[in-house]
Length: 331
Length: 274
Image 1 (cartoon, rainbow over the protein chains, first blue to last red):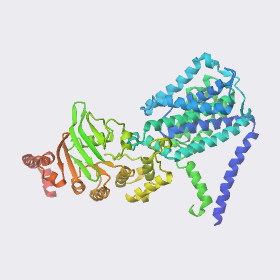
Image 2 (image 1 turned 30 degrees about the vertical axis):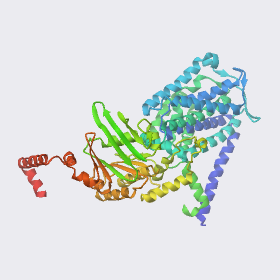
Image 3 (image 1 turned 60 degrees about the vertical axis):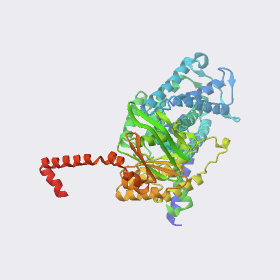
Image 4 (image 1 turned 30 degrees about the horizontal axis):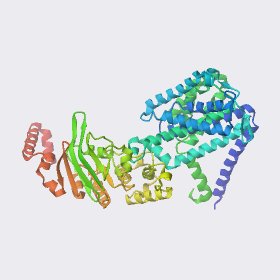
């Protein structure tokens, strides 16, 4: 074993240690920064979820925030004084995910035959329909006033009240979601989705039911969106329709496009950039959309594949680490 | 197991592409469907595979009727195919192109008790298939990065990897050079098995004549003649449909001569080349 291997292993350890250090330092930062990190993590979860549909299966969904809304309102209705139902957070988390999945299948059925632009338009409308429905269902959702005073969440007796608590919860969930999606990407299901993206007809000719395949993508992705919504609701303890506008859907799609379509590492990078950017540029808040536009055009012109190269994905990193550790002679 | 077309017709609007066609393909042989352009060869393949619906008549595999089933169900019953124009998953590796064929047909296997391949078994089959088709060295290369000839071979491998009893090959030699076509013919001939029917649609007569057990000739959507290569070669109607009658041939020669005479220099250039 040569010196260089030891150096590289130490380098790897240093990088890992730095990541762990940075992540464990977050709780000691001022509350504002913790909130920003929480926000990044929520958007990572959402974008990784949406990436299942957009990145892997190649179906452009512009109404993703509707599932987020379904999750958030699930918490608002089932854990507040609204109907005096007070279910525990963890139960609502699963209900929110299930409700999201059902909404995903409901959206999936009518759009099965649509592709490209047509699909984008219908999903966009779906997102708006959900928001407007919530806005008008005064008796259930209080309409535009929203629902306030949601229950303080707690997880098996541990209170979830401060941004730091949510930071730990979100961190664990982000890792779980990324690991789950990575596993799916590598499984035969992920391969079938990628094949679907390339040539739907041939996929059917191989004996694969593309209807199931698409609905599965919509349902799983929407379930992740729903779960994200439940956390959002319990974190804000207030929900109103204006949190779920088309701009939010667009932001999640932008995260994927700017980071790197179909690439979890890219999506994480995209979420960091697009959540931090408006915070840094707070003084220019009214130019937010303009800045997004400039960033998007710049990325598309300079790096059409996204900020992170498609080759630099989670699989690549894992392979690199594994070979360096198990059989360094190969590197 | 046999594939049978019974009185099948296909109309595209007012155009009759296939007229009352009855054909039967039993496992254990290689069949070729030939005919001039527009004779309806590819239409037959597309109907069997479920890409086109039939206008009337039935297509059966064994006792099950295919012509009313959705495309993926037809494939699940044991019909696989290649395409006239290459249709690989370009952004996936060669190995993944085969692997995806083993996507579970049902998520309810734990209920029905049907056997489901493990990942290791799946990979073993795919690697064996790659070796058989001489593609092992490019297993991890993106399919879209392969040279054309090898892409054709990969599409062939994808049609055979699931051991489907009926394999439809739509112009396997299209775009291949002479040597590649010969290799392709040898490859297809080596894939002949007692539990498999291979059905070719092909323009390359050398390939068709050298490997087919039976040739079905279509003309204007009707079966012109059917039999061994020798029989078909000797059939006058086939020669007419393909080459024209001897009188027509004479006409063509005369026309060509008069064109050359008028063409002056250009005609001379042509003659010099001969």
